[in-house]
Length: 266
Image (cartoon, rainbow, N blue to C red; front, side, top):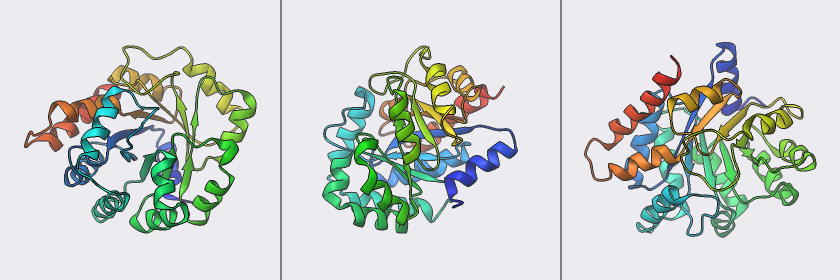
């Protein structure tokens, strides 16, 4: 089935180009700004946008994204409010949107209800950080029925058996974690990236995105040399944190992403 995420990677492959996938936390600093940021990120050259759904116990996230979740949670937003933001984004842009969540908020909302509502809102994929492939049969079937790509993480510690199971579950692309541990900007890329990519490549033809720790143009460029997409999260969220309250926050974040992309492509 030819869905938005797959179409995006196909178009880029035809042009021999790679994807840039920014992550922002929905509701930080507020949902109105989130909508504006998603639209600006597309204008800045992004190809897919990840929207993090705030959760009170984000085990896979480093301090920068944890603080962004805390700021968003103070608003008292519900999952339905985040889906309303997805609808607002979708009214102005067709850029693929991936919801990045933990299973607890999804379970509270209701899996079947979420899949249907997310599809109707315009979401294209969902990545559940703490969903294990061994327990994902019902979840994946639900996503597939609603034409939403279920995206899973591959870690450097993932063995052959687990990678096989993960890629069987994945749709759209496979997300390779560049290193063990939580999210957060790093000065250099981990030496585990290439071996992990090699194990994944030997088992699937899906595009591969690499994230966790990417914060500079040279790192984006390095990822593009070996994978189909680079994901930048903490570095962008840190910029949002630093500029909270600024009237020019949205264009400033767009400028930061243009810097990442412009310098990376030279």
